[in-house]
Each structure stands twice: as C-alpha cells, then as structure tokens.
Image 1 (cartoon, rainbow, N blue to C red):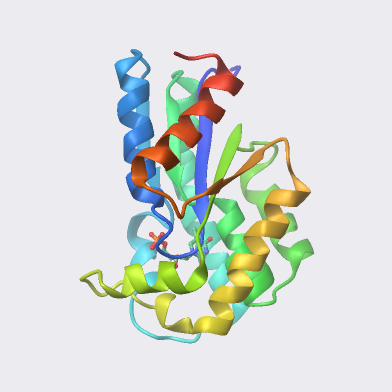
Image 2: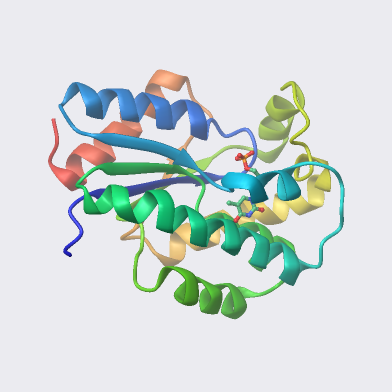
Length: 205
Ligand code: TMP
C-alpha cells in the first residue's frame, strides 16, 4: 500500500522544548483540517527500563532495547497511521539512538545504521526538526522538572556535550531531511520557524 501520510520527527538534546513544539505544530496542522497523531519514543513498556533508575546497560543492550521499543512502535502506531494518511509527529526517533548510543555511548554509526535497516527498512522521516539548545540551559530546564525519568539526565555534562555535537553532525550529514532550529528563543518564535519549514516543504497553509 502506498504511504499517504507525512512523518515528522523532533530531535535534540535534553530540555530543548521538543514536546511543547510538537504540541504547537499538531494544533496548527489540525486547524488546517489535517489528521495528526502525536507520539514519542521510547514508547510502551520498554520505556521505563531506559529512562528510570541508574542501571548501566552495555551500549549494545541499550541500543537493542531502544530498537525493540521502536519495532513495536512502528508496527502498532507509526506505519498504520501513515497508511491511513495521517501526519505522525514523533518526539524523538532513530536520530536519538544515533546521537545517544551511536555517538555518546560510542557504539558507532555502522551498528546503529544496520539495526535501523533491520527494524525500519526504507522508512525514513520526511522531515526531522533538530532543536538546538545550549547544553547547560537544557539540562537546567530538565533538572527543574518533577518525576523519576532521570536516567539520561544524570549521565553528566560530558555525555550531553557529546550528544549535542552528535545532533549537529547528524543534521549536517542529511541536510535534505534535517532542519536545525535555534530553540534558544521564545516559544512562539521557535514555533514560527518550525511552521515555516513545514509550510515550505509540504505546501500546507
Ligand atoms: P525524553 O525525555 O525526550 O522523553 O527521552 C527519554 C530519554 O531517552 C532522553 O534522555 C533521550 C533518550 N533516548 C536515547 O538515548 N535513545 C533513543 O533512541 C531515544 C528514542 C531516546
């Protein structure tokens, strides 16, 4: 069946405002009569293993857990929604695995690329918005949040610097798919920048 929907992913380090921006884009698309599915990764029952506690998984085990969650997510949400013609807006996707596990946890690009092909085949996001925020500011924001999903936040400044550099590299390698957005601006300004790239690319509005 030909895929009819549009797949947009939001990426970036901690505290860059991805969820807020995803919600704003979803609302604006709905105003244009577009069917939107909002989702996030890691998703489902595997999420808690990854985002809570402080277990030191090996980088390979951690990567496989992210891809296991992703395999389920693709099958139960992403692919069916795209087949139905919806826009799927996903808060983090495989670029996060590349940045966090491939680069910062040093599993390497080739292993992550191989697993991606096994799990997702040729499916790729139509657009990836990489929200760029200074590391210290982003970590400061997440530190003020309530909750127990702190496993990655606790990984320290050096780790998050590596994640930040990784996202810049990932965006530079695929300039057709990825748009780097300066997220260190007022929420509305960031939203307008995101809307401009969406409108321009997909002719909505
Ligand atoms: P969130 O806080 O943005 O919901 O994401 C949960 C954490 O999981 C975040 O710190 C980034 C991390 N993560 C990875 O390390 N690899 C991945 O593949 C994904 C999707 C998230």
